[in-house]
Length: 313
Image 1 (cartoon, rainbow, N blue to C red):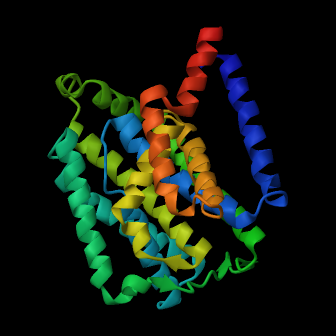
Image 2 (cartoon, rainbow, N blue to C red):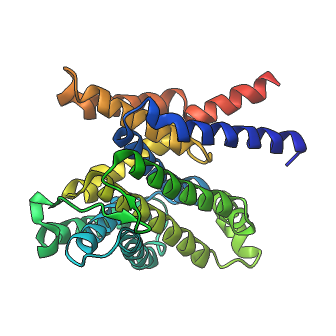
């Protein structure tokens, strides 16, 4: 990285921090928190698809499973906020280890179908399990206090806590991508047989990436459950897995900031269209956007902007 690139990244980071701190002054905090939760979810998915080359159709299982565990931990076990979030994240990590161990034995479409099948199994378990609330879900999940002093019933206070959680998760993704392990992930994505010939245990590398991605998806789901005080079957349905694929592809798969942009666009469209005459056609509109994205700009919003900048210079 050159000094100019490092300086530009520092400027972008400072701008992002300022925007993040001032955003709740002009935008409804709950809406911002929804964007942050799904942005973290999309970043977790992009770590697997964009940098490892593995397409999972079952990430909703980790997102929703963590939401249920966190809701139960806070409502029934009475755990504090931090331990509730940690419980959900650990549950997603364990599920990721089990699902990943089974799924990485396959490649391509077979990998995607295995993850989808296992995720549907978890969906039906959530439908029948007594602690999930069935079709009603878990409602009225208490927010509690962060660090024992920050009252999370205040939306603005909770927003800054969620912003910290997102920043930590995003920072972890950035560190993984820019580490030697991240370079191995890219090598596996580009040419797995060659990575094997160089002596790398690609199955272990892919499993590790799958577990880290699952844990971050669980962190996003656990945080979302606290924000909306709700964990429902929607969180573990395959539609949720489809939405995170759309967010990642729309923003720019394989880019660092692309999933954040994609999540912001999708959540904003959902929020805007759901309150208008197109309420019943939100999935149709999002599907149309997905088709246009695949056909017209396959690199996504951020990917296309990067390409334009390179062409200009």
